Image (cartoon, rainbow, N blue to C red; front, side, top):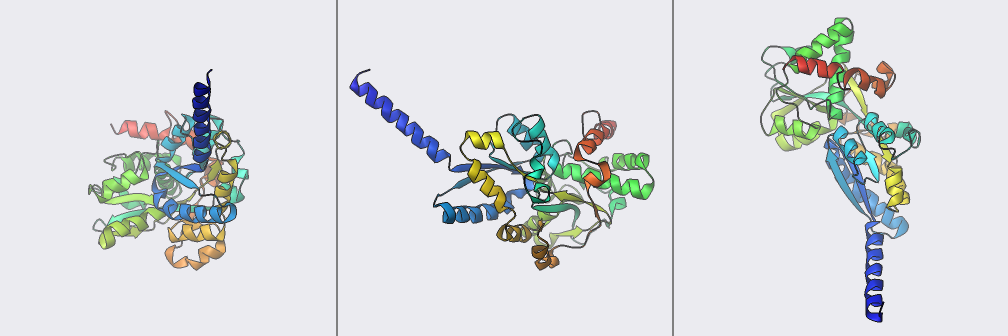
Length: 333
């Protein structure tokens, strides 16, 4: 190799190395559909904290979509440093099928790695013209319900399980619950893949009399539509924890392990807990939660793990191929 060619190769390698170093200061957080606004507030706070501690300017990129679709994207190669989901099942899948993080990921952080939680509430149009107050009202004649697809959306799975558990307790067992959710999904005109799509269907396309969605999404709807919508708290609903995890293999490959760990640690700080509360996510810090008590109505909630033993069992019974959701949705076609 002559001197000119050697110098060109050297400079090319140096530039490649520089690009690698620069890109290492980028983190990718792959998250669920309705967490956009939360992380628009959260990320600048962490970037400022990291800058103060290390002097490094960090860029955080976001990817949002239906939680199950997001998990599949990570398994298929989307290079997430961290995942922040709306139920543990999607992170379990990344651990088991993708082998990208430890199976005991939930033990790596406090509160089973969930820094915040939400719940499923109803959104109705101004004046509640269809008189929707509880689950029984969703199957009244003429009522149209918007729920995202439980096969692709954590929002949809939580809505389905809340409906099923209400019917099981109130109507007398699994057979009655199966009949109720079959009837309920007969009132669902369209299944969007994620919670944000379902909200768009309800708010912008004007479809549906009631939207089932996360509590924090309702605040965003009110910002968009003002008093054109109202929230309804049903007699029973479900606690939806928002777990987080380090995608260990990807972060290590990108040289981002320390940055990603710090990013996840920040979720449990008082500053971050305040951010969650201001974005209508219930913080796990009880002191912070008490400061925002006026934002959060009292609930009668159950945990999926308490009813089924684990999310994996709930998935097998209701959302696996050929399980109860496939049966009821197939029956309505």
